[in-house]
Image (cartoon, rainbow, N blue to C red; front, side, top):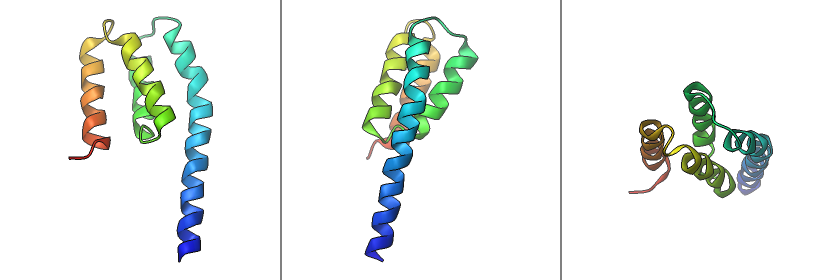
Length: 89
């Protein structure tokens, strides 16, 4: 049983690493220009799903900071969604 749990934990770490590798260039691109609402929401939705990982959370925050004054209502919505999904209490 312990070995199986260890294998699952290893796989989760691998998935988060792969997600970070995929999302990093997308975030860099998105932060270098102004994107449409649809593009922003699409990426934030995917980042939110993996925001339990610290590196992906940093990408999520980076996008939120970049677009806070461009799309404030959407950023507020996604900050609240993060809190509901990942913060304890």
